[in-house]
Length: 177
Image (cartoon, rainbow, N blue to C red; front, top):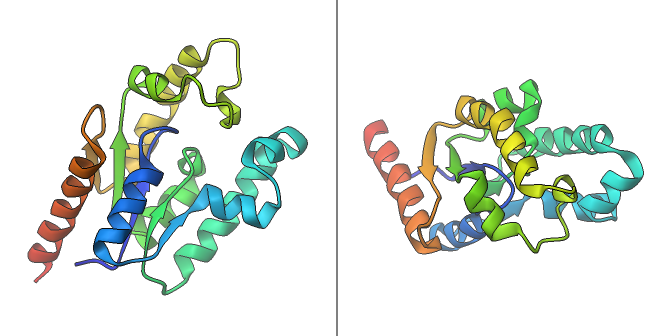
């Protein structure tokens, strides 16, 4: 089975939760890019956005992704929701962080999950559901371009999502043998 896999998707799609459980099951380290960035930046994503802007954050995110992709470390990697915005990141994810799984959830489902979340800077707007719909329209094609597999993450349990990812990993490993 692969010793590295990556999860991409909208904020609130379950990347961190599924990634943590999958890593535990596969006995691999788990890397949450947003958490790693917060440690490197010495600030929350929200605070860094507010002080330096999204462009500066995306530059730091791309640098971290390049570092992680260039390493030989085994891991389950959870990217930030906007990591796919840069074409270079999409190419790097697809080539060096494979296989990539897109945890796909609708904006309405994500809104139900995140409606009380105050930590996500892109959702601190007057109409967060409309903002999620805009983000989804912009990012869904980019996630699809990046991913090797699309996993529907609408309502399944975390355990079911982990099983679905693990099954794809096992099938890919069998096909490679």
